[in-house]
Length: 402
Image (cartoon, one colour):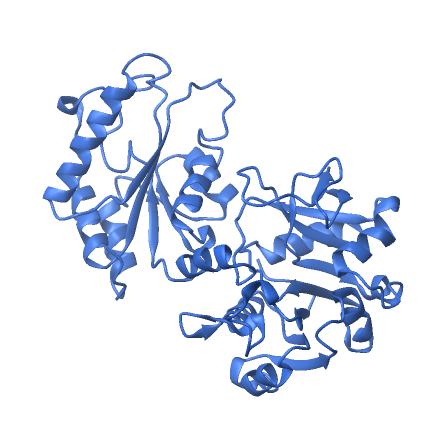
C-alpha cells in the first residue's frame, strides 16, 4: 500500500556509531555495507518504492561520504537533500535544527533500522487518528530485545530509553510519522527524538503506536548485523500449507494418520522439484489438530512428515523446514491458522521478509493468515495446482539458494 499524504522521509544518519566499532571507525554507521551495498541505500530504495519522493538525510560523522555516494539522489530515482550537525548532537536537536527543511507531514527513520512494515497502512492509521505523531513499535513477544515502550489501543502509553519503567513491552524502531509543529516545540532538546516527543505528547495521550510483529534489522549492533545479512540475502521463499496443497485432504474432522493414507496431489512433487532447481527455499506451515483430538500422536505425525520429506527428496525436491500447530480448534493458541503465528515462527527461524514471501494455501483461513503476516497469497486449487504456480514463479528465477 503506497503512502498517500506523506512525501518526505527524514533519515537520521549522523552519530558516531560507537557500538559498531571498528566498522564505523572510518565510515558512518548507515554506510556499513550489506553484501556490497550500503545499508542506507537499501533504506532509501524501500521508501522510494513506498511512494516517497524526497529524502532529507541528517548527517554528522563522516558526512561527506554520504553526500558523495548519494549526491542529489538523481542516480537513485529520488530527490535527496542534507542537514549536517556535529556527530555528538542528539537526535532531537538534529531534527529540530532541520525544521526549515521539513514538510508539514513527514516520515522519520533511524538510519540503522529497517522493518518491513506496510508504510501505507501505518500512514493510514496515523491520518485516521488525527494525532500529531505516531511511532512504530515491535511487539517483542518473542523477547528479541529489551523493551522500552508500552502501548494500548493504538496509543503510546509509556516510554523509557533506560528500559526500567513499568508497562514496557514493545521496542521503539522509529518509522515515525510527524506533523511539523511537533518538531517546532522540541527546542533543541539534548535527548533522542523519541524521548523528546514522548515528553512533549505522552501526558496528553497524543502519540499513536503502530505495532508490528515483523522483526527489525540493520547495523545497530554486531548481533543485529549478522541477522541483517541473512535477511537481505535469503533468496526467494515460499511457505506451503499441507493438506489440499501437497496431499489430498481428508473429509472434515478426519486426518491423515499414517503414510498409507497419504495421497499426493497431481503436480505437487513436480512443483517442489521446480522450486529446488530454481533455488527457492520451501517451508511448510500446517494445522494438525488431529494430535490434540487424539487421532494420532506427535510421534506418528513426526514419522509421517519424515516419510513425506524423504519422498520429496527422492523425487528431486527439498523441504527446508516445517512448522506445525497441533492445538485443537478451541485452544486459543496463536499458531493455528487463520492466525499468523506459524508464519512468524518461520520469519524468526529464517530471517524472512514476509512481505516478499509467498504463502500457498487452499482455504480462506490460509489467506487470512497470509494477509495478517503480510505475505503474498497464492490460492491452490484443482485448476491452479502447486505445480502450475511453481512453473509461473520460477520461470525467470536464477536464485541459488539450496
